[in-house]
Length: 158
Image 1 (tube, rainbow, N blue to C red):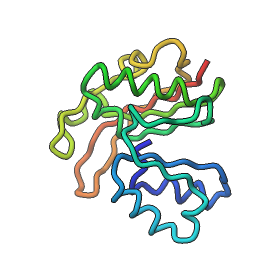
Image 2 (tube, helix red, strand yellow):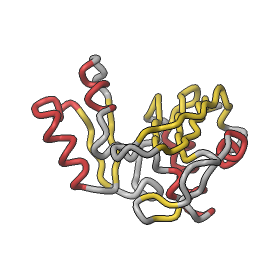
Image 3 (cartoon, one colour):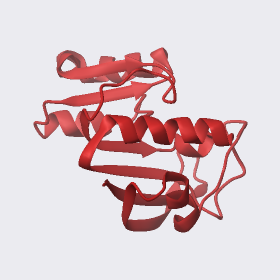
Image 4 (cartoon, rainbow, N blue to C red):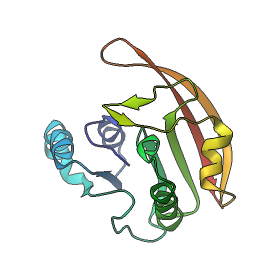
C-alpha cells in the first residue's frame, strides 16, 4: 500500500517472494520502483490507483503493509473506505501492518494535513475484525535529518 518508490518490494523480490503486489496512487513513483528493479519488476503486480477505491480481489492478500498512507486520510469517510478495502482484500488469518504518525508526529507532511495516532486510536479506526497483536512507536529520521514519530500496529484479520 503506497509502495511507490519504497524499497520494501526490492527486498521481498530479492528474498524470493513470488506473489507481491505494489499499489500506489502515483504512476511516477511506481515507474521509479520498476526502473530500479529492472528485469525483476516483471515479477511484481503493479497497481496504480486510489487505495480507497481501486478494485482488489477479495481475500487475495496474506499481508497488507502500509507505512505512511493512512495518516493522510483525514476524512472519516476515506478512513472507513480504506478499512473496508483491507477487510475485503486480506484473507482471514492474514496480517495487516499500518504505520501512521504518532501522537508527537508532525501536523503536516509534504504540505498536507495528517492525522496522528496512538496505538489505541489507530487500532480503533479498524475495529474488532482486526485483532491487535502488537504496536510499536518509532522515531524515524528523514532524508533531511529531522525526526518524525510513527506508530506501528500489527493486526491479524479475524
